Each structure stands twice: as C-alpha cells, then as structure tokens.
Image (tube, rainbow, N blue to C red; front, side, top):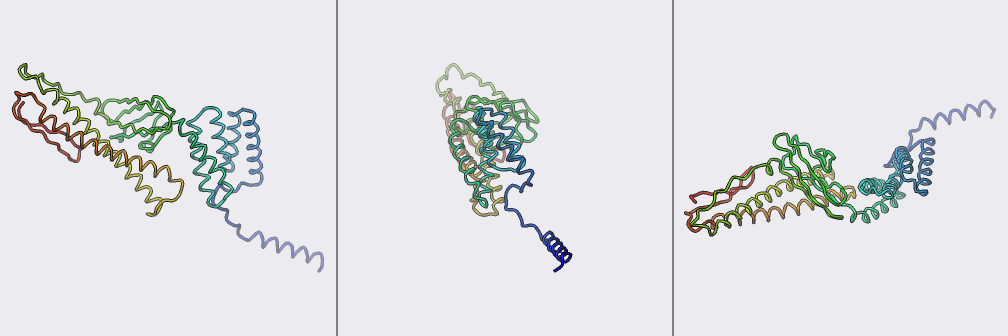
Length: 330
C-alpha cells in the first residue's frame, strides 16, 4: 500500500469516527470540558488549602467557583463545612440540605456521591439541636406582605418550615386591607413551631361588657370565661382549616410529582415529614377547637347571674368558620 493510499484511508476512518453520535452522559452534573475540569480542580484544591489554614471566607469563594463549574455536591459540602466553621448555622443547614438532596439524586447512578450524601445527612443530624424551624401560617395570604425577623417571605415560603436560630422570632404581616400585625414567639433548638396569623382578628376591639346588676353578682364570671373559652375554640377551628388546606396542598403536589405512586425518592422526605406535622397540628386544632367551642357555649348558657332570665346559646358552623350565637334576655 502506497503512502498516499494509507493517508487517504486514515482520513476516511477519522471522518467516520467524528460522524458517530456521542454517548449520552449519565444523569447528574453536565460533563465539564478538560479545561473547565482543570479549573474546577484547581479552585477546589485552593479552597481546601484555605480551609485547612482556617481562612474560611476565602475558602468559600473557591469552593463556590468549583461548584459553579461542576455542580459537584462535594464542593457544596465543603461550602457548608466552611459556613459551620464561621458559626453561620442557618446558612450551613441550608447548604447541607441542598447537598443531601443533590448527592442522593446523583448517587442513584453514580455511587461515588454516596459518601457526600451520607456525610451531609450525618452533619445535618448533628446540627438539628442547634437550630429551630418556624412555619408561618397565614389565614389571608392574598396580597399580604410577610416578614420573618425582617426578611420578606414569598408566598411559596408560607406554610413551609424555615430554619432560624433559637431565640425570639418576629413575624410581621401587612395585609392588603386592615391593620398591620406583629407576632413574637420564642423557639428553642430542635423545635419546629407553627405561628398562625389571622390579619384583622387581633385588631378587633372587644365589645364592652355591661356590669351585672348589684343584686345578682354570682355566676357572671363563669359566663365571661365562657366567651373567652369559646373564642379560643373558634381560633382553634381556624387553625384546623388553614393547616388542613396546607397539608392537602403538599399531598396533591406529591401525587403529581410521583405519578400517583408512593414516593420513595429521598428528595421528598422533608415534604412528607412536613405534611405529617401539619396533619398532627390540624387534628389537635380540630379537637381542641371543638371542645373549646362546646365548653364555652355551655358556660355562656349556664354561667349567668342567678337573677338573669332564661338564655340560650348554640354553636353555628358555616362556610366562614364557627361562632357562638347567644339569644334571650339577660
């Protein structure tokens, strides 16, 4: 075979190989080019060196650069560890949660990410007692502006567990109509607390209660207490309605995402746990609310002054909620 023929044959083979379709990449981060991979490795190594020297702020910048190129959970895990070293527990918790989800997804086809998944899970478990979670439940979310510790919450974050530091938390609500509201609560490490806000309810002024006649002073206090107990029962029923709606929304989302089958994907573990928590809150609110309304109505009916005329009280439940209706002369 002449040299010219060999060159022609080599050119034909090379052209044929280039025409073949490339093999699809495994599910996960897009494959980086050789130059990009080298840059990512260089950034990761620089971040590791800075981390070992205790220069954690600088290390975060390098790890984030590596993650931007490769989308590797390993780089994100090191971002979380650097945040932990800086004492930024909330940010570290969020990074670890994201790392766990990403690594679990990739590990299904790339076992090399199992270690990152397990490490993120273990470090999350160790961090749980050091942070708290708050669920802001709003009775009238349409058009309302909500902030948690001064940070605005989008509609998607209402009804979802938000990681906070233990201590005092402040929820402020500016409804589309009505007075601005503020709620302060205290949370402890490892706790998940639901803060229910119903704009307009707290701003309403109670009707003045006329003093009982001088000759009939016994029993009036029981009736007043009945109004308080019934009011708390109505609030409990309101919480039941809101939490039930949120739990149903999360359930419908799982059904849609998982095609009507049982979700075994670890990415949905937090959603399932939150749905169970909302169901528990809803059940407790229903029972407590119903008992409170019934007990309050009974106290209103039977707790009046001895000289009072016959009165009747009943519980009315309708589309707008539950309330106590009192009739008769007192």
